[in-house]
Length: 123
Image 1 (cartoon, rainbow, N blue to C red):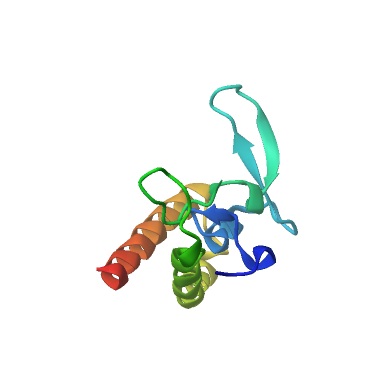
Image 2 (cartoon, rainbow, N blue to C red):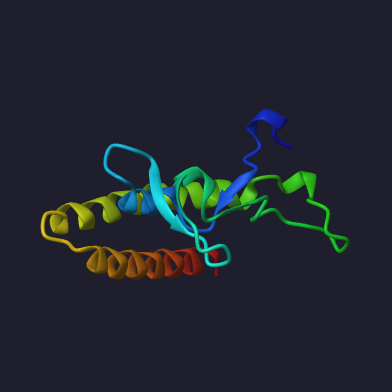
């Protein structure tokens, strides 16, 4: 098992490298609209699209298996590292004249491609 300080507790279901495409210039923050409250706030990308222990394997009772701590998270990090170059290249070639709508379409397609890549590796 990893040391407690090495355990990644907050695990993103949308990689931070994709969230950076939507950041307010010169920051690690994005605008977030809360559907329930109707409020719009600035949030750090480390705080959104993530859950605690999202990818941890659990036993029948729901407890995290200490022998597999961060097993999936660490594998996803490797894949994200490889995918980041492709994503950044795609953003770079389309950055100057890209509207927010095109960014959203691009991000959606990249997320689809990212999940497809994960499925191929995991299956």
